[in-house]
Image 1 (cartoon, rainbow, N blue to C red):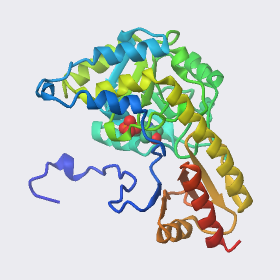
Image 2 (cartoon, rainbow, N blue to C red; image 1 turned 90 degrees about the vertical axis):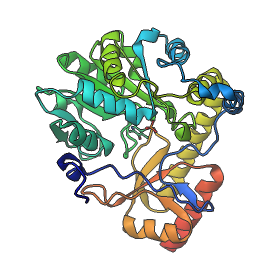
Image 3 (cartoon, protein in one colour; image 1 turned 45 degrees about the vertical axis):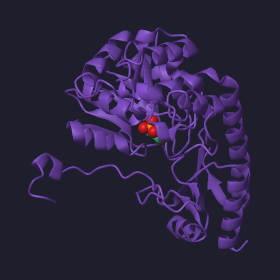
Length: 353
Ligand SMILES: *Cc1c(COP(=O)(O)O)cnc(C)c1O
């Protein structure tokens, strides 16, 4: 606390990101980063831009990137909004589309940045409980609201909803914006981008941080009707005209152009996930069905916080949330086959089995 802070700043409770340790011999399975590096084409495209042209501002609207994304998803470039990580895209969505008279709805167990944005922008919200099997019940969202947001697959559970139930919600909820945060959709789900031309109130948010191995570049985007994108552009141009630099734009374009690499790395992660789930089950874990690049698992005997601590002593970091309903779970990012084996061996030693 400082007396120089505004009253507003004094009452903020900011988001705590997963640890990024300085020591690099740790096996990092705590923030859902991709275990594989970005496509070699991405690195090449970035290297080509390391010259004096960096003195110039980047194109404020990242038009080439928007066109690339639009072609990839078969939409118009005017339906694409880009930002400095999807967290920034989400921030503009909360500020520009979700600040309404009625409270917005999101799941009680979900991305913990949502309530932080609500506090930042003074948005009222209601948390809708997950069902007993930790899935989102969209029926429970069908009453008057100022907007709806949920990740699909959900984080930190990994559970996926089908497009059929999302479309049912959109049918029943046409008076407020519905945000589908698809940070993990490439690891096994069907994207709601298929529905944006049909529902003017739908906005789908993506990131290049997870499936495209570019967390360190901070690139996110959203796809929606042109009217929603125009609203977001008004917010963006009142905040930062150049959210993406030259290197970010080039990296993102190169990533979308190397479909083979993208498919290969996603398939690798998905295959490793399926193997990891089986191994964890053999160790006595109950693992929620995951369509993401992480699994959410609890052990039938051993406490999750104790396991997280013991893994840490052995040089592995996983995420544990000290929160009601989920404090018996560990969220474990799917790593390389070698990382996963190390995790399984360590857990096996910790459990004495
Ligand atoms: C990782 C994540 C994000 C943030 O992604 P960035 O593009 O790195 O800011 C947003 N939503 C969910 C659900 C995530 O897990």
